[in-house]
Length: 79
Image (tube, rainbow, N blue to C red; front, side, top):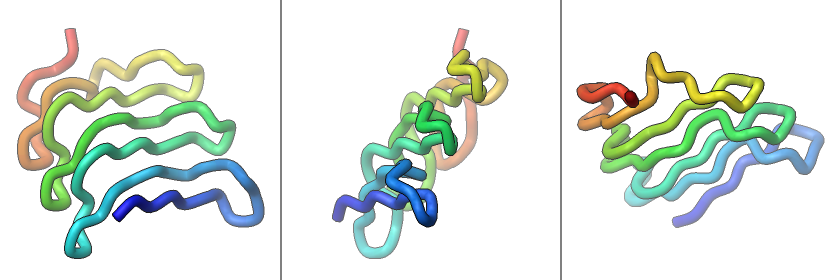
């Protein structure tokens, strides 16, 4: 089911995720301590799958690791 983890001792989200049978499955969003999005994508059976966007601390997209993933492997970088 749905899971949200917070930075200890604060109301700042660390990540939002979904689990099925103990594995990450579905939408996933991770946050920096300042509340800005760090990563946004989807998991399938515990592995990155589909379009993933990773962000730098300033909010700009990290093109080196963003793009299409299949079974945790980046095979088509964001252009």
